[in-house]
Length: 256
Image 1 (cartoon, rainbow, N blue to C red):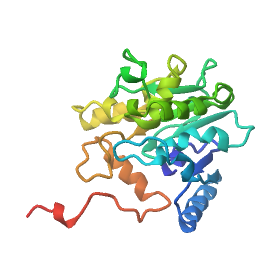
Image 2 (cartoon, rainbow, N blue to C red):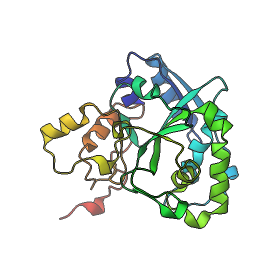
Image 3 (tube, one colour):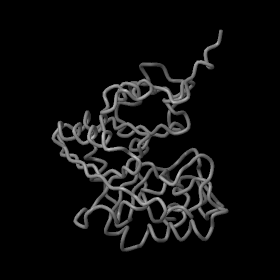
């Protein structure tokens, strides 16, 4: 929220957040912070039992499927919804992204150059598999084409094909039916050049809109992400600055 507000001072931001599991104190802190900056926020909770039978792999929890529920949670009069993962930072004005033409596709997204393609779910060829961490949804098209329903059906019918949870299901049911957007709208770790100087890093990030902390997480004390300091800056200025900088730190990591 801190990075969104910092770079969207000329925009009226309305945030829709699924907050299942957060206590009332945390919710009040977030709400007060948003209201102090003259923006709005709406909270939703999910009965997680409705997702209990959906396939999970690795360390993911059922929260990864929340984005499939948003189109049915938000008010009917909302035509577009910009979904943004929580492991991101907003680094520029969001208006351009929000107004990006979708040409009657239900969603706009960025090609995932780490996964590249996924033949097991029928998606082959460079540029045809997208990352679901940033999704520009045309809710009318999304609901008319029953994208959420089709995604859940795919998850239930083909659990053995699932590697990247909701992302795989969405790519399977949206094959050749999504608007390809520039990577500046969802800068994955795999898009970041690893040999650039500090000055080149500033140039690289200057026109980027959303930075997505995939693969190398800045809350890991051994993170190799070149932009991890940005995360710590916004963590410090977030509604809950008491949060730990590193989730994997312990005294045992100190080398004598």
